[in-house]
Amino acid sequence: MDRRRYLVTYDVADDERRTKIFRSLMQRGDHTQYSVFMCELTAGELARLRRVLEEMVNHELDQVLLVDLGPAARDSGRVVGSVGRPYRPPIRALVV
Image 1 (cartoon, helix red, strand yellow):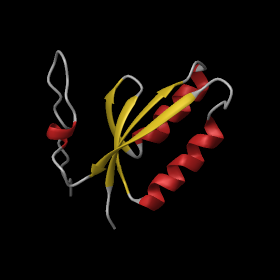
Image 2 (cartoon, one colour; image 1 turned 180 degrees about the vertical axis):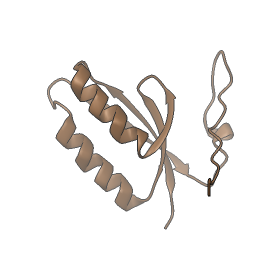
Image 3 (cartoon, one colour; image 1 turned 90 degrees about the vertical axis):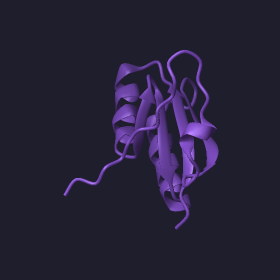
Image 4 (tube, helix red, strand yellow; image 1 turned 60 degrees about the vertical axis):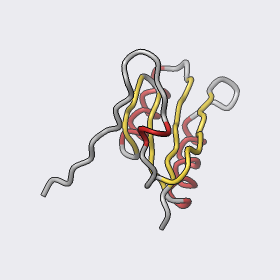
């Protein structure tokens, strides 16, 4: 299955809803900044994430943006630019 990299960011005013979204995204991606995650997802995983988020947000007040950054195999250091501290992609390690 091809994975694609998504920048997921949210603007949620309610602490309880924001915490639920944060915890859900922690299970699916890398916490990059406040309210910003980098997730590598298959099409099925993206669909499931969208369903979970749709149940969590207040559709009148909240917003979650999912930005497709392309294939996950591409070097994220070339996809994400930064101002200030340089962006350093998370290092993933398999712990056995």
